[in-house]
Image (cartoon, rainbow, N blue to C red; front, side, top):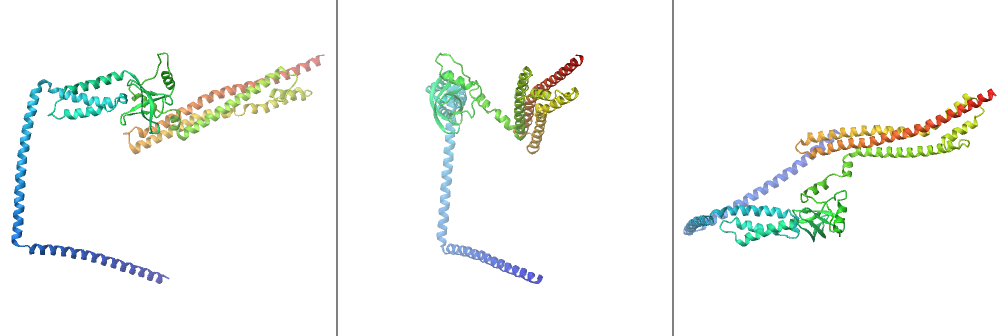
Length: 458
């Protein structure tokens, strides 16, 4: 068997060696044929050069030298012309500056003002009514940067007009119809109201705040509208006919409003708690549901017991006191000790029904903060892992773990506090009901003993 395998391996190696050898031979042949072809081309070129006459080669050399001399002469002439133009330009610039005198600094002032105005116009929502103002300013600045040109009175008046136009528009409330970037990024045409430079609002089709997008030079809907009564104020303001109405504005011209809506909401906070946070909230919901259910059931039983106390002569089986009275009636002929034991046994049977699930509420109120503490530890572990991997240069890499740590702690306390209070209330009600049964039992036994004492005395 081994001999056969060895023979097979040897045959395979021989076949592979033969294939490799044939491939190498083919490659070598191709390289050789390429070298032969290249040598043939070089030989043919040399033969053509050798076949040219000596006179022809001399003529070609002289023509090349003549062309070189002509190009050098043209280059020298152009260099001299350029130097002359530079001298003339410097002379004219000097003459222009001398003629301007003290007003020469006005160039720099106008350029600076124009550059600032471009930024003001692009960041202002007044561009909805006066678009493309920055195009004229850009052209004006470009011409001002050319020292050979000077501004004109008309250009100064236009610059002053644009400044005054922005100042006037910033203090006015204007209604207009403009193209808006919707929540999905689609372009929509809506009726807008511009509150100076402090805000853009609309009620088409619903009350909403908009922000000015500097890049696209369009108004865009906020990703999330502010909470509270801000949207109701928009509707009241736009439909007001009394002449005076209030509406919320952003004194930072949209920056503060954008940051406000980017702040995490309640759902975002809950999501930051992760799995532990969801478990805490679920546990809290179960605890509150049990507490409410138990409180209602105890109140119903207490009401039935109160009605039974008012009609103690007719025991009913729908309440603990009625069942105890029935036991009393059934064992009325027994001795006092036996009757007391029967009634005590009845109370022991009723107590688990009354105290059912009360302990569960207490356990939930104790477990919730412990789960919050566990979420805190998990969040801090995630934070230190982020620090280990990415360092402390970017706080955003640590924000997730810190947020989870804090949110789970808050959720644990949020569940623990109300469940502790509910447990205290439910436990007090259950204890009061059990005490009522004990007092009533003690009263029945006392009446029985007094009746027997009277009969003996008689």
